[in-house]
Length: 168
Ligand SMILES: [Cu+2]
Image (cartoon, rainbow, N blue to C red; front, side, top):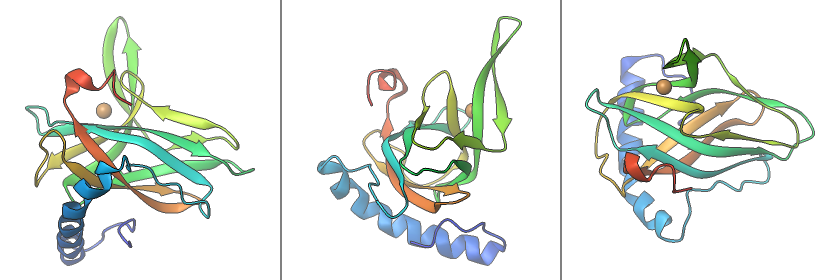
């Protein structure tokens, strides 16, 4: 799926949104056999355990997953996007003077032969301006843009925020 490209024109954005919405319907089937994973060996990057939180009052969601780099070279995660959000960005939870906050990151490094966890309280993807169905149990198609592996798309299951810590 060519959904990883930066969207430049409003027209393009609209077209891609329609495609993603259509494929979101098949996502729930894929989820039945446990498949939010992307074990594409050609990429050398394996994405697993992808989940997003049910929207907050501010119409935002966080994306969590595990990124495994089986390659002998480092890669970097540079972007996240979905047809079901206007904006996607990379964030990190930070503690400043005892206050929990978030800071935006330009990229997240994924060293060779290791894995990086995007998890509650740490690194995460931030999705804002949500649209479409974000009910608990739905699957959202999210595309992660890597510097070397390119765009990789995963299905992220919508989770109740109260379950996010337990579920993986
Ligand atoms: Cu955030």
